[in-house]
Image 1 (tube, helix red, strand yellow):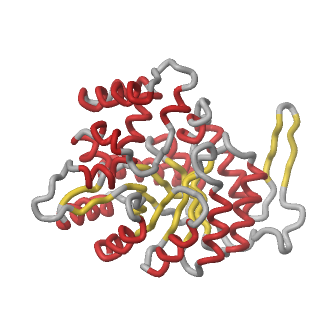
Image 2: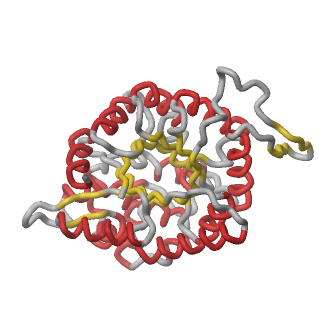
Image 3: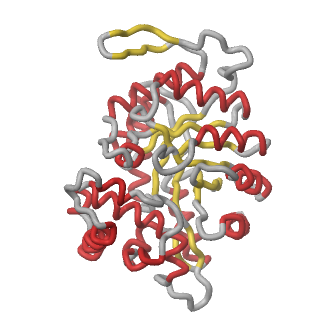
Length: 348
């Protein structure tokens, strides 16, 4: 299985990208959450100048964040700096929109936006609409400004079958966050492939899993502080979604639902507070704060982290690969450079 690294966008990220390339990782990603982290395109531009081989991923942008022409200009500008090395993830903006106190985009918007990006970044025309006005748009002057010759790889963020079908119709790949169930990946792959057949879309498509990983030493506590610090940022994101989405919370087991309630209490907010996003997304996907460790109950560790002995972790990765995951992308949060080196040894 191929391997990658994901991190939050900000100054200095280019040094991690260069180190990831030295260690042999296949891709380096940054998140696109404007009100929480830095700008992904600024960060990846720095990474492009600091690297030569590694693919650079946006994980993920959204129609609710940028217009298609603006997003296409950013992606194609990055492609000019790193020709043929750009992976553009696109999603509904579940996190990025909620950090603004807004709802994610609809699946239909995701599909039309992604299709427009695919057209524009390949130098083709596409439909563009603002209110009642509509027309056809394309890059008017490519030259030294943007690269529409080298292909950009597109992946659609999917937790369910509808988004996977969008990926299939557009000939795009799939990316998912914290999804460790091989059966779920099999279902996503089947939905993507069925939609691709119906749309006669034959483009090569990869599947990416963004996750966290911790290999236990002999006798080490599976649910100890070191494990929580390594995987807790993803587990906490699930609790935040539970605080935001009543249907998601209702589906959680009792101990996780109780952890959602404790999270709200710790943050001093409620599920109905219109300003809850300002409290919930503080330090989102950053290193787990010590006071939040007690929220990471054992079932969250089991579901949202790849945790175990070396043999156990290897077995889980192999099962995910058989289910259709092509690349495992890990976020190191405690000591990124040391963790990347350890991951490179484990995943070699």
